[in-house]
Length: 325
Image 1 (tube, rainbow, N blue to C red):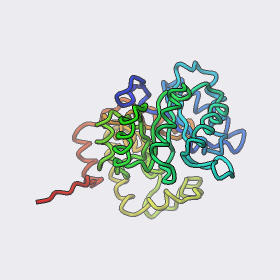
Image 2 (cartoon, rainbow, N blue to C red):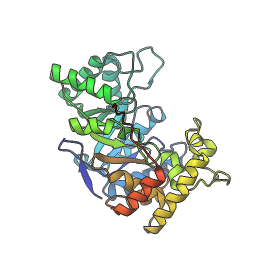
Image 3 (cartoon, rainbow, N blue to C red):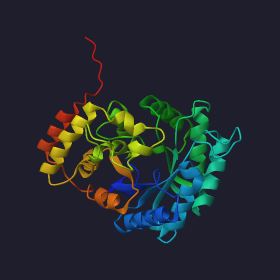
């Protein structure tokens, strides 16, 4: 396993990290498999474990805390997130100072921790002033409950720029990381966000490297969805919207590139993200030990330039730039 700095900060995170969004805790067999995954991750050099209070209504935090207590705390980088409802009360959601302060205490209790390494704003929250959000997160760093704080989806480049002005004006602890979705099929952060993060030394810890499973290659054009796959049971049907003929044609071509390199598409897709120096870590969720074993092979894999050019041709991505005159 290789490690990278989180942006300009001194802390180092594993190139591949373990996410718990998809962790299945519905039965003893599923929980036993999840424990094996966490143990293998640690034994394989993964030090960054990502969670959120919204995952399984807090059960994911409790599970992860219980499993990680067997490992030295100094060797672990543990994160969680705040925003989504944690109760039925009007203030049991969002990014108000009240909800942030109450949520961190519950998260630390759930995970049996004295502090979190990373704490993310899980969404933006239009109803709370940006200054209030930033002051609350900065104060958690001052209190020692959080070492670094950051933001997740829906924080645009413009919002990050606005946040930086407030941080500078009030001498707050800085935003250290952002956690956006990023993969071969969704490259929106390349338009502006990646440049802004580089400008301020903000680390990028991406999720959904396999685009909801599309980039595993298990979905084929004209063939039934594999039994038990996300496309057959995922409630929000995110993967189904991605299974277009155009995307499946790209996947078929990408699989050939992977085969020519002596690897598989899932490894190639994850390694492709890590070719970008701006990326600190790729968060990968796993429901099976075999999936984690495959993900681990992406760390340190260098994709030859001719293959990178072929991938770009297949993807056909064009960065948005507007030129006048």
